Length: 88
Image (cartoon, rainbow, N blue to C red; front, top):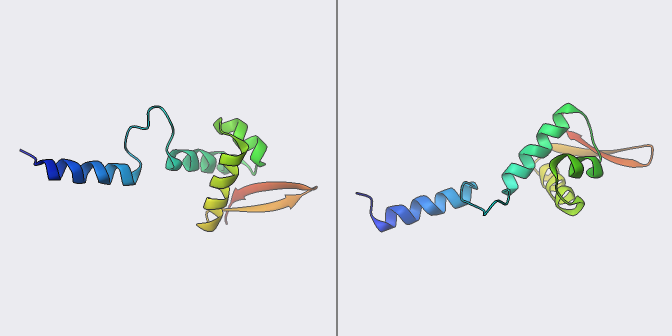
């Protein structure tokens, strides 16, 4: 029989890993995974990404910048448009 402490530890680990119930909201990891899946298809603008993953542009931009800090994604400009792509 698991103790209350074990249950609390398990709950904290699940929360840390993004596995807890968010009441229908997506976790940050889920959003970043969706962005990466979209960028595997082709480079996209924040507007295109936000439409594809059904998130606001601000949320999408923040997650793209986070992926850039992790060296997973990078931005580039083409014809005065900023695009995002997976890092090489």
